[in-house]
Length: 121
Image (cartoon, rainbow, N blue to C red; front, side):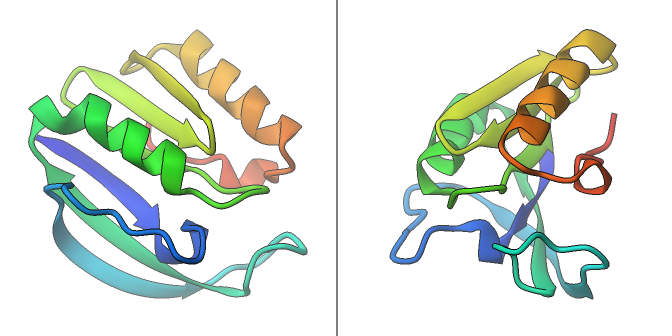
């Protein structure tokens, strides 16, 4: 089972995520301590689950739907972590520090602060 988090505010205006089989487990609003100039100060976090078989399609859908600059979505299967940026997908074995470091470096390169590059290992 895929588990992950999508920030509602990270989606481009006008985007529709259709044909995705997400089961929302929790919806939570949080105040962000240090949003960037392009981010709102309050975010809506959608914790979700999806079938493992949908991982590739879900990564592509998120990559096409995320706004720029400075947004990403993350999710994981039992074996892999996916970190998805607009137009770029990182996929690596869970616990792979090199894969995580590469994804974090890309996040920094597009202006995401270190404290926001905190997806689960």
